[in-house]
Image (cartoon, rainbow, N blue to C red; front, side, top):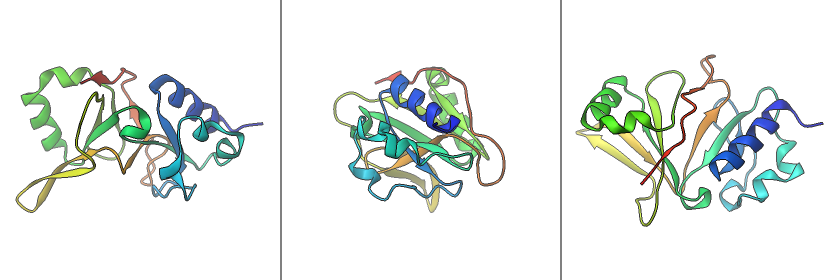
Length: 156
């Protein structure tokens, strides 16, 4: 019988059209070849058996997941500044845990790969896209759960 986290991973993969992977609480992928997975591959019995009570669920971002990306803000002030400048983005899928948040979008057409946005030497935000993944469900390594506003990602 599959663990509850495997069932949640299936649900997330299906609802978002995404490739999901099991990761440890310290965000280490539990499947070495995660970059090679496709949607069907992430839902095989062998992959789903990797989930346990200690497993978090991450989404492989970008082209692998039909353009699903996130913008990661570790600093709450940077997030507030971004949302003040882009108030319509308050209505997109948003997840958070220890600090800041990830804003999720479904991109169409061309878009950048994994990119860090810097302000001087400070990383202001990170564009999580092809080549990266973001945890969407589970328990942060500091002990708090990842939360979601349960809103679909905006399409761009």
